[in-house]
Amino acid sequence: MKIKRAVDIGSLEKLSKILGTFDENLNALCRELSVVAYVDGVKIVVDGEEHAVDVAEQVLDALSKLADTGETIDFGRTSYCIELAKEGRAQDITNFTSGVVAVTSKGRQVKCKTMGQKQYVDAIKNNTVTFGVGPAGTGKTYLAVGMAVSAFKSKQVEKIILTRPAVEAGEKLGFLPGDLTAKVDPYLRPLYDALQEMFGIENYTKLMERGVIEVAPLAYMRGRTLSSAFIILDEAQNTTKEQMKMFLTRMGEGSKVVVTGDVTQMDLPDGKESGLLDAVKILDGVEGIAVCRLTAQDVVRHPLVMRIIRAYEKAAEKPQRTHKEKNER
Image (cartoon, rainbow, N blue to C red; front, side, top):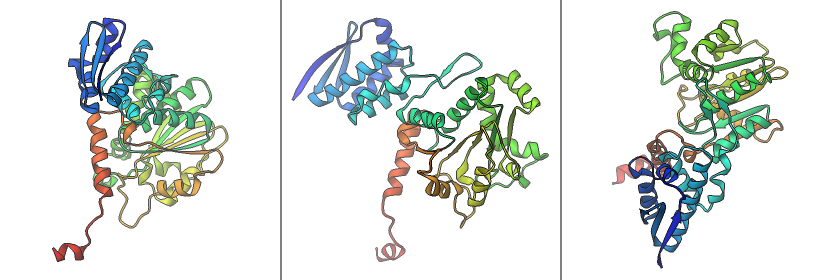
Protein backbone atom coordinates (compact mmCIF):
# COMPACT_ATOMS: atom_id res chain seq x y z
CA MET A 1 0.00 0.00 0.00
CA LYS A 2 1.33 3.40 -1.00
CA ILE A 3 1.30 6.21 1.53
CA LYS A 4 2.63 9.75 1.90
CA ARG A 5 4.20 11.07 5.11
CA ALA A 6 5.82 14.39 6.10
CA VAL A 7 8.85 14.46 8.41
CA ASP A 8 9.32 17.77 10.21
CA ILE A 9 13.03 18.67 10.33
CA GLY A 10 12.50 21.79 12.40
CA SER A 11 14.71 24.41 10.77
CA LEU A 12 16.09 25.41 7.37
CA GLU A 13 19.66 25.17 8.66
CA LYS A 14 19.22 21.57 9.75
CA LEU A 15 17.28 20.78 6.59
CA SER A 16 20.20 22.02 4.49
CA LYS A 17 22.61 19.71 6.39
CA ILE A 18 20.36 16.70 5.88
CA LEU A 19 19.74 17.32 2.18
CA GLY A 20 23.48 17.45 1.45
CA THR A 21 25.33 19.04 -1.44
CA PHE A 22 23.00 19.33 -4.43
CA ASP A 23 20.49 17.21 -2.46
CA GLU A 24 22.77 14.15 -2.78
CA ASN A 25 21.64 12.71 0.57
CA LEU A 26 17.97 13.02 -0.31
CA ASN A 27 18.63 11.52 -3.74
CA ALA A 28 20.39 8.57 -2.09
CA LEU A 29 17.38 8.02 0.17
CA CYS A 30 15.04 7.96 -2.82
CA ARG A 31 17.29 5.67 -4.85
CA GLU A 32 18.03 3.14 -2.10
CA LEU A 33 14.46 2.90 -0.77
CA SER A 34 12.55 3.38 -4.04
CA VAL A 35 10.56 6.32 -2.70
CA VAL A 36 9.80 9.82 -3.90
CA ALA A 37 10.81 12.63 -1.53
CA TYR A 38 10.58 16.41 -1.79
CA VAL A 39 10.88 19.46 0.45
CA ASP A 40 7.86 21.34 1.73
CA GLY A 41 8.95 24.24 3.94
CA VAL A 42 11.04 22.65 6.71
CA LYS A 43 9.47 19.25 6.12
CA ILE A 44 10.53 16.38 3.88
CA VAL A 45 7.57 14.60 2.31
CA VAL A 46 8.12 10.92 1.48
CA ASP A 47 5.84 9.05 -0.91
CA GLY A 48 6.02 5.30 -1.57
CA GLU A 49 5.28 1.82 -0.27
CA GLU A 50 4.40 1.87 3.44
CA HIS A 51 7.42 -0.14 4.61
CA ALA A 52 9.83 1.95 2.53
CA VAL A 53 8.30 5.17 3.88
CA ASP A 54 8.65 3.84 7.45
CA VAL A 55 12.36 3.15 6.86
CA ALA A 56 12.85 6.55 5.22
CA GLU A 57 11.24 8.25 8.22
CA GLN A 58 13.56 6.36 10.60
CA VAL A 59 16.57 7.48 8.56
CA LEU A 60 15.47 11.13 8.48
CA ASP A 61 14.74 11.13 12.22
CA ALA A 62 18.20 9.68 12.91
CA LEU A 63 19.93 12.16 10.60
CA SER A 64 18.05 14.96 12.35
CA LYS A 65 19.36 13.78 15.72
CA LEU A 66 22.90 13.56 14.32
CA ALA A 67 22.61 17.10 13.01
CA ASP A 68 21.51 18.26 16.48
CA THR A 69 24.78 16.91 17.93
CA GLY A 70 26.85 18.79 15.36
CA GLU A 71 27.76 15.72 13.33
CA THR A 72 28.53 16.13 9.63
CA ILE A 73 25.80 14.59 7.49
CA ASP A 74 27.73 13.58 4.39
CA PHE A 75 26.84 11.13 1.64
CA GLY A 76 28.80 8.28 3.24
CA ARG A 77 27.11 8.69 6.60
CA THR A 78 23.67 8.89 4.96
CA SER A 79 24.34 5.69 3.01
CA TYR A 80 25.40 3.92 6.21
CA CYS A 81 22.28 5.10 8.05
CA ILE A 82 20.11 3.78 5.22
CA GLU A 83 21.89 0.40 5.42
CA LEU A 84 21.27 0.14 9.17
CA ALA A 85 17.62 1.16 8.88
CA LYS A 86 17.03 -1.42 6.12
CA GLU A 87 18.41 -4.06 8.51
CA GLY A 88 16.03 -2.94 11.25
CA ARG A 89 18.84 -1.34 13.27
CA ALA A 90 17.75 2.29 13.06
CA GLN A 91 18.13 2.63 16.84
CA ASP A 92 21.88 2.01 16.42
CA ILE A 93 22.39 4.98 14.13
CA THR A 94 23.12 7.50 16.87
CA ASN A 95 24.87 5.07 19.24
CA PHE A 96 28.25 5.12 17.52
CA THR A 97 28.70 8.89 17.59
CA SER A 98 29.25 9.26 21.34
CA GLY A 99 32.78 9.90 22.53
CA VAL A 100 35.84 11.43 20.91
CA VAL A 101 38.66 9.06 19.98
CA ALA A 102 41.24 11.83 19.55
CA VAL A 103 41.63 15.48 18.57
CA THR A 104 43.90 16.45 15.66
CA SER A 105 46.44 19.26 15.85
CA LYS A 106 43.90 21.52 14.11
CA GLY A 107 41.21 20.78 16.69
CA ARG A 108 39.16 18.36 14.59
CA GLN A 109 37.50 15.66 16.68
CA VAL A 110 38.05 12.10 15.52
CA LYS A 111 34.93 10.02 16.15
CA CYS A 112 33.63 6.60 15.18
CA LYS A 113 31.43 6.70 12.10
CA THR A 114 30.02 3.16 12.19
CA MET A 115 28.99 0.59 14.78
CA GLY A 116 31.88 -1.62 13.70
CA GLN A 117 34.32 1.20 14.38
CA LYS A 118 32.81 1.83 17.80
CA GLN A 119 33.16 -1.86 18.70
CA TYR A 120 36.77 -1.74 17.48
CA VAL A 121 37.60 1.34 19.60
CA ASP A 122 35.85 -0.16 22.65
CA ALA A 123 37.86 -3.37 22.18
CA ILE A 124 41.13 -1.39 22.15
CA LYS A 125 40.09 0.37 25.36
CA ASN A 126 39.16 -2.83 27.15
CA ASN A 127 41.84 -5.28 26.00
CA THR A 128 45.62 -5.54 26.02
CA VAL A 129 45.83 -6.90 22.47
CA THR A 130 43.31 -6.11 19.74
CA PHE A 131 43.21 -7.45 16.19
CA GLY A 132 41.42 -5.19 13.71
CA VAL A 133 40.73 -7.19 10.56
CA GLY A 134 38.85 -5.68 7.63
CA PRO A 135 38.97 -4.16 4.15
CA ALA A 136 40.59 -0.92 3.08
CA GLY A 137 38.90 2.29 4.17
CA THR A 138 37.42 1.04 7.45
CA GLY A 139 39.68 3.25 9.59
CA LYS A 140 41.65 0.40 11.19
CA THR A 141 45.00 2.18 11.20
CA TYR A 142 43.74 5.74 11.63
CA LEU A 143 41.62 4.94 14.68
CA ALA A 144 44.43 2.88 16.21
CA VAL A 145 46.81 5.83 15.81
CA GLY A 146 44.16 8.11 17.32
CA MET A 147 43.85 5.80 20.33
CA ALA A 148 47.65 5.71 20.67
CA VAL A 149 47.91 9.51 20.64
CA SER A 150 45.08 9.78 23.17
CA ALA A 151 46.78 7.24 25.47
CA PHE A 152 50.09 9.11 25.18
CA LYS A 153 48.58 12.52 25.90
CA SER A 154 46.78 11.14 28.97
CA LYS A 155 50.09 9.59 30.15
CA GLN A 156 48.79 6.01 30.00
CA VAL A 157 51.87 5.14 27.93
CA GLU A 158 55.30 6.72 27.56
CA LYS A 159 55.95 5.82 23.94
CA ILE A 160 54.21 5.13 20.64
CA ILE A 161 55.67 2.44 18.39
CA LEU A 162 54.32 1.82 14.89
CA THR A 163 55.60 -0.89 12.63
CA ARG A 164 54.83 -2.65 9.36
CA PRO A 165 56.34 -5.58 7.51
CA ALA A 166 58.30 -4.22 4.53
CA VAL A 167 56.54 -6.42 2.00
CA GLU A 168 54.34 -4.65 -0.50
CA ALA A 169 52.95 -5.64 -3.89
CA GLY A 170 55.87 -7.91 -4.72
CA GLU A 171 58.55 -5.23 -4.29
CA LYS A 172 61.74 -5.82 -2.31
CA LEU A 173 63.65 -3.21 -0.30
CA GLY A 174 66.78 -3.82 -2.34
CA PHE A 175 65.14 -2.47 -5.48
CA LEU A 176 64.38 0.89 -3.86
CA PRO A 177 66.95 3.72 -4.03
CA GLY A 178 68.69 5.32 -1.03
CA ASP A 179 69.76 4.24 2.45
CA LEU A 180 67.62 2.09 4.77
CA THR A 181 65.53 5.04 5.97
CA ALA A 182 64.75 6.04 2.39
CA LYS A 183 63.97 2.43 1.51
CA VAL A 184 61.41 1.88 4.29
CA ASP A 185 59.78 5.33 4.15
CA PRO A 186 57.28 4.39 1.39
CA TYR A 187 56.03 1.47 3.49
CA LEU A 188 55.63 3.59 6.62
CA ARG A 189 54.23 6.74 4.98
CA PRO A 190 50.57 6.11 6.00
CA LEU A 191 51.69 5.91 9.63
CA TYR A 192 53.74 9.10 9.37
CA ASP A 193 50.77 10.92 7.83
CA ALA A 194 48.35 9.88 10.58
CA LEU A 195 50.78 10.86 13.35
CA GLN A 196 51.54 14.23 11.78
CA GLU A 197 47.83 14.99 11.52
CA MET A 198 47.30 14.12 15.20
CA PHE A 199 50.34 15.90 16.66
CA GLY A 200 51.10 18.56 14.08
CA ILE A 201 54.36 18.38 12.10
CA GLU A 202 56.42 20.44 14.57
CA ASN A 203 55.43 18.42 17.67
CA TYR A 204 55.67 15.18 15.72
CA THR A 205 59.25 16.01 14.66
CA LYS A 206 60.28 16.84 18.24
CA LEU A 207 58.77 13.61 19.57
CA MET A 208 60.50 11.60 16.86
CA GLU A 209 63.86 13.23 17.72
CA ARG A 210 63.35 12.38 21.40
CA GLY A 211 62.55 8.77 20.53
CA VAL A 212 59.07 9.04 22.05
CA ILE A 213 57.55 8.12 18.70
CA GLU A 214 59.17 5.27 16.80
CA VAL A 215 58.18 4.19 13.31
CA ALA A 216 60.19 1.23 12.07
CA PRO A 217 60.06 -1.95 9.95
CA LEU A 218 58.91 -5.08 11.76
CA ALA A 219 62.41 -6.61 11.60
CA TYR A 220 63.58 -3.93 14.06
CA MET A 221 61.33 -5.39 16.78
CA ARG A 222 63.32 -8.62 17.13
CA GLY A 223 65.09 -9.10 20.46
CA ARG A 224 63.39 -6.15 22.18
CA THR A 225 61.01 -5.85 25.12
CA LEU A 226 58.52 -3.01 24.56
CA SER A 227 57.23 -1.69 27.89
CA SER A 228 54.89 1.25 28.69
CA ALA A 229 54.20 1.64 24.99
CA PHE A 230 51.25 1.72 22.62
CA ILE A 231 52.34 -0.57 19.78
CA ILE A 232 50.61 -0.79 16.40
CA LEU A 233 51.45 -3.45 13.82
CA ASP A 234 49.92 -2.33 10.52
CA GLU A 235 49.42 -4.40 7.33
CA ALA A 236 49.80 -7.53 9.44
CA GLN A 237 48.40 -9.75 6.69
CA ASN A 238 51.92 -9.58 5.22
CA THR A 239 53.60 -11.09 8.26
CA THR A 240 54.65 -14.72 8.39
CA LYS A 241 53.60 -16.92 11.30
CA GLU A 242 57.11 -16.62 12.73
CA GLN A 243 57.13 -12.81 12.46
CA MET A 244 53.73 -12.53 14.15
CA LYS A 245 54.78 -14.72 17.07
CA MET A 246 58.00 -12.72 17.40
CA PHE A 247 56.06 -9.44 17.44
CA LEU A 248 53.41 -10.50 19.95
CA THR A 249 56.03 -11.75 22.38
CA ARG A 250 57.83 -8.35 22.40
CA MET A 251 55.12 -6.84 24.61
CA GLY A 252 56.28 -5.71 28.04
CA GLU A 253 54.66 -4.35 31.21
CA GLY A 254 52.15 -1.53 30.77
CA SER A 255 51.89 -1.86 26.99
CA LYS A 256 48.92 -2.10 24.66
CA VAL A 257 49.04 -3.70 21.21
CA VAL A 258 46.85 -3.21 18.15
CA VAL A 259 47.32 -5.41 15.07
CA THR A 260 45.59 -4.35 11.86
CA GLY A 261 45.31 -6.02 8.48
CA ASP A 262 43.24 -6.83 5.41
CA VAL A 263 43.36 -10.53 4.58
CA THR A 264 42.13 -9.87 1.03
CA GLN A 265 45.31 -7.92 0.20
CA MET A 266 48.16 -10.28 1.03
CA ASP A 267 51.50 -9.87 -0.75
CA LEU A 268 53.33 -12.82 0.79
CA PRO A 269 55.20 -15.22 -1.52
CA ASP A 270 53.24 -18.26 -2.66
CA GLY A 271 53.10 -20.98 -0.05
CA LYS A 272 53.57 -18.64 2.91
CA GLU A 273 50.66 -18.57 5.37
CA SER A 274 49.71 -15.19 6.78
CA GLY A 275 50.71 -14.65 10.39
CA LEU A 276 47.56 -12.59 10.87
CA LEU A 277 45.24 -15.41 9.82
CA ASP A 278 47.18 -17.85 11.97
CA ALA A 279 47.14 -15.58 15.06
CA VAL A 280 43.43 -14.81 14.82
CA LYS A 281 42.68 -18.53 14.57
CA ILE A 282 44.88 -19.41 17.56
CA LEU A 283 44.21 -16.43 19.87
CA ASP A 284 40.52 -15.65 19.35
CA GLY A 285 38.85 -16.16 22.73
CA VAL A 286 42.01 -15.78 24.83
CA GLU A 287 41.40 -13.48 27.80
CA GLY A 288 42.77 -9.98 27.23
CA ILE A 289 42.75 -10.41 23.44
CA ALA A 290 39.96 -9.15 21.17
CA VAL A 291 39.37 -9.83 17.49
CA CYS A 292 37.30 -7.21 15.66
CA ARG A 293 36.15 -7.98 12.14
CA LEU A 294 35.21 -4.87 10.18
CA THR A 295 33.24 -5.23 6.94
CA ALA A 296 32.42 -3.29 3.78
CA GLN A 297 29.65 -1.63 5.79
CA ASP A 298 32.33 0.07 7.92
CA VAL A 299 34.10 1.69 4.96
CA VAL A 300 34.31 5.44 5.57
CA ARG A 301 36.17 6.49 2.44
CA HIS A 302 34.27 7.36 -0.73
CA PRO A 303 30.99 5.36 -0.84
CA LEU A 304 32.18 3.85 -4.12
CA VAL A 305 34.91 2.01 -2.15
CA MET A 306 32.16 0.14 -0.28
CA ARG A 307 30.56 -0.90 -3.57
CA ILE A 308 33.91 -1.99 -5.03
CA ILE A 309 34.65 -4.17 -1.98
CA ARG A 310 31.19 -5.73 -2.11
CA ALA A 311 31.55 -6.43 -5.83
CA TYR A 312 34.83 -8.26 -5.21
CA GLU A 313 33.29 -10.18 -2.28
CA LYS A 314 30.37 -11.21 -4.47
CA ALA A 315 32.72 -12.35 -7.25
CA ALA A 316 34.75 -14.39 -4.76
CA GLU A 317 31.62 -16.19 -3.58
CA LYS A 318 30.77 -17.47 -7.07
CA PRO A 319 31.86 -21.09 -7.56
CA GLN A 320 34.79 -21.30 -9.94
CA ARG A 321 34.42 -23.61 -12.90
CA THR A 322 36.96 -26.41 -12.91
CA HIS A 323 39.39 -26.87 -15.79
CA LYS A 324 37.40 -29.93 -16.86
CA GLU A 325 34.12 -28.00 -16.95
CA LYS A 326 35.72 -25.28 -19.08
CA ASN A 327 36.99 -27.86 -21.57
CA GLU A 328 33.57 -29.53 -21.81
CA ARG A 329 31.95 -26.29 -22.95
